[in-house]
Image 1 (cartoon, rainbow, N blue to C red):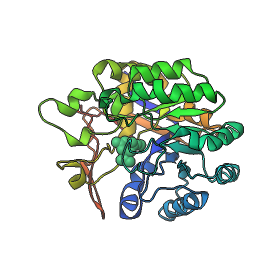
Image 2 (image 1 turned 45 degrees about the vertical axis):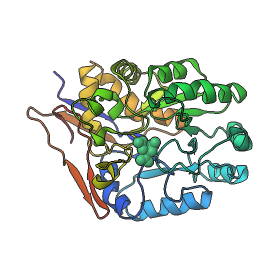
Image 3 (image 1 turned 90 degrees about the vertical axis):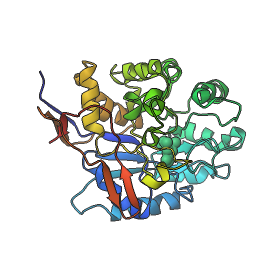
Image 4 (image 1 turned 120 degrees about the horizontal axis):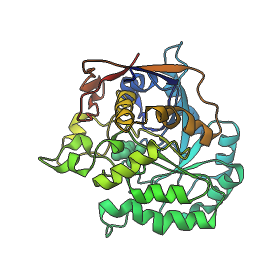
Length: 345
Ligand code: NCD
Ligand code: ZN
């Protein structure tokens, strides 16, 4: 049985770091294991312009210890008022690594998102021209569409027509949760997907059977087991178009444990040990490095991190904090529902 695994230092290609006290409290949870992360722009107010991104990046870097070389890769929040020239300038100066499309109202802090794709075509055409990736939250917001069908319907109604119209646009379908999403990525050029830690582990029963468990509520919502198995197959396949984006999305416990709880799972603390467990169970430990450390940089046109991390397997379960205490409040850490034996040395 394999007891140690040394891999290239991983990156997180979809992360919510928030701002202020929460940012300060949770940043070390990511920088401990990860070299870089794509930082989501859904602050209140959102990160819309290149100047917003520069300022947000400075707030993150200010909180890093001097000897920490963690690199936040910034994104812009696409709005119907986004200026294509500002996006092009931010890409050229490497202020940003991608632009994020939120359909208006699809998820947490997405009110300023896009209602009519026609209005952002000049930005998307510019991005296609310069090769800047578009990260997509792939869910429709039509109230008539069932929440469990919103990803599949988005592909059919929005994403597929957009990519037919603009086939050179490079797209990352963020946090894919369905076999439909996996199939779409496999069939479409210039398209990759991130997969989260929790969607590889939980299904909708984990969320709803025996009582409603708010710390497993996230968007896109966890689907049925057949979908989880399709995600697992994609993650462990070695296919370069699938890579890790934890979507670690902290909300304080009072905001989650409420009659109308916020969406988001916080998995930064124990993602690598959870993934080592999952990949080992799938007899695919040899594919973990591609998923967490190689496929993402290749898609984004960046070199893999220079450093390495070593995961070791312990005889007795490793304990992780149940909560991270921040000055914004306590944040519950993702519980995979199984004992974890792997730890990052
Ligand atoms: C994210 C958040 O809280 O910002 N929540 C979530 O459930 N994933 C937003 C998002 O990525 O959809
Ligand atoms: Zn997210």
